[in-house]
Image (cartoon, rainbow, N blue to C red; front, top):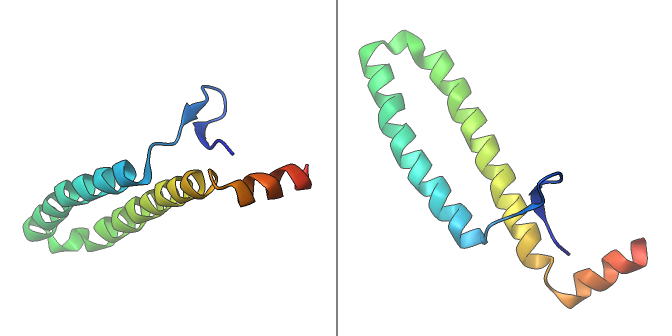
Length: 85
């Protein structure tokens, strides 16, 4: 089974290890930015909290797509997909 990030462009989902490395890099950068904003104005907590939740949701979506792409290469899942069509 092939998993794509965009049905129109048919961009394949990257390997899970690349997704996890990208998420790690993104979170490390955002952690500093979020901390700085809270240090400058603690009243930003509500906005920062929403951004953290949105970022984590996007990361979860990417990780799930990576897992599906990885597991989708297994013959048992390929067979199950063919049977369901």
